[in-house]
Length: 290
Image (cartoon, rainbow, N blue to C red):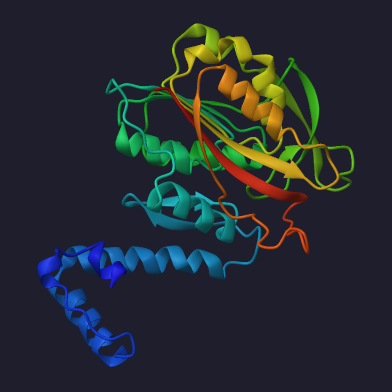
């Protein structure tokens, strides 16, 4: 009854054996009619599940926070929404009602929407180098008429330059490793350093598909200006892993760390390593200060 318990007070809940499907169905029908909040949540859950029925890389819209939000890929949008809005992996307690947040790898803006939901007055700097995706990001921001959100359609790197970028079409666009032969474009890249020098950062979120260690090494001496950091670490098949270096860098910057695996995690890696978009491991790394 966990799903029910997320919506209704415990006094409304009755435990039934798991095989009583007819009773569950009747309870669902009753609660749909009786409780508006249950009906609304069920309708939204149905809307989110529908994202999984879209073919890969087909754009569309779905309802979020009372408005229609655009996406570029249904299945990846479903996964990102689950992490951000249901599991609330980015939730944090700020010491001000106007926190400064850097969203590196903003994609279509679900993170921006979430940050604005919990802190409406937040000032957000969002980086998204894939032009197709950043255009959707801008549209979603305009849909909600958000203020204090700046979008920079550039990649982050350890120098100001032009990079070859693999435009994957969903949530896995990345700086090209050299082996990419399709959907490769050129993008402008900038350093993160200047943005960490300007002011204190309440939350730094990095999901930049393999460039995270390179970028953070370039501004390691400035990470003391960051109160909280989230890094999605990416390990690519056949490439040297930078995880030990990344963890040491964060530790030396004074962060206490917590680590989880969001989706790509091999159950029996000695026998078989699962891969996705050229990666064989992803980790969510949370850094906070005591």
